[in-house]
Length: 211
Image (cartoon, rainbow, N blue to C red):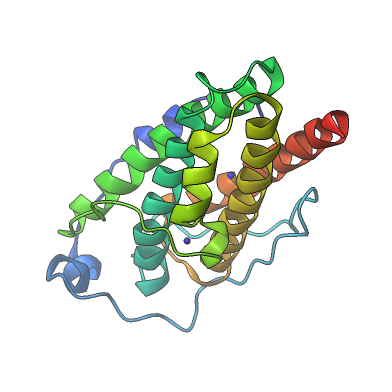
């Protein structure tokens, strides 16, 4: 289960070359992981990870890349669902800005990952689940509470859930950076780590202001 955050057109315009290296994915089976995947361990939230060379453009996807996209799509979708509640429930412009950045940043990322999976002959995940604690995903009970909250109560719960959600996304992206080989997904994971760490710091600042 990643700054106002600009739309990353470089990612949206990624062109996928599907060749022999992608045959395992095109068949619908998850490709085998490769032992020579780069090892990159990002720092703690709020810190940048150590510099490391990204995978070459010729590197084909491995199982970690597919798992990353198939897990991050529903994860992002839940973030969009939570962000979509803010306009009618908060009067705080800072909370509204957080929600807007989630939408502006994560919606195009979903489109990139869905296109990437389709290029491998795989069907993108249809929806998100509500597994409690799974990479910061909100449970259905938590989402119900968020839907019924208003004003300061909404702001407090929204920030708590979204910070946890972002922290989960950073952990997912860190796994991709350690194990992935596909350049597009590796770049996506790097962006998630850097961008969502910045958002976590911003949201914690808003929490402190709320008291």
